[in-house]
Image (cartoon, rainbow, N blue to C red; front, side, top):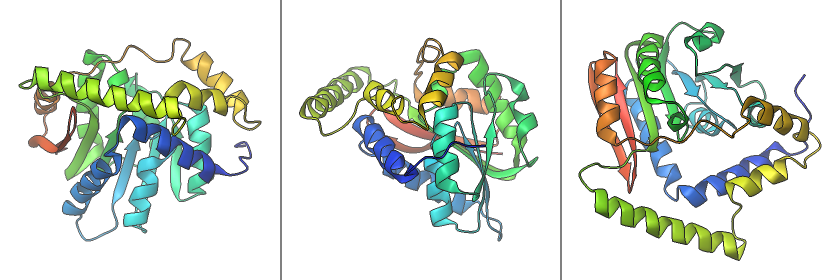
Length: 252
């Protein structure tokens, strides 16, 4: 049984604000991702897989835009999944699975999806595993379905400008932390660890990720496009870009 969270929407808002410290244009990328879903609809409500979905950010926005959509959210983090479950209240299928192994697909309730969406999550996977995952995602999409990954994907043709953009963003973020206008990633988790419902789940999370996650790995957008092409997608390209972040799209 999921723990009783007094106000999951307070945690959703807190998560959104914490994430927006890193991603000021976060909602723009979600809109672009859902525009891609809209573009591949085949006359019925979409079946969407929210990959590494955390608190349900993408699922909530998908259901707001497409109320009849079927949403499946996959993640491994017990604390974030508890917030997602309490917020989505039966409107999405919640799946606990480890994307680090190919067996994650065995837990899915459907064989094919119209869209697979993920944001700021897959940079925790090493290169060889992410390449393999891209091929696995092609296989869970219906023909004509779309995969979109929005993440830290610098433009490798603008190395110095990208560095300056990152330095500028870091300075602004640190100023907001110093002013107390936003929580940092670590502060957010510290607060979750003191919540009666979330505390045991945060402890469980620490046992799953004893060092946090694997080291962050942020290859340029060209790497993702090449890996998606090698995975067998028929169309591959950049759907959206904002500073050093991008969303790549691939059509089966």
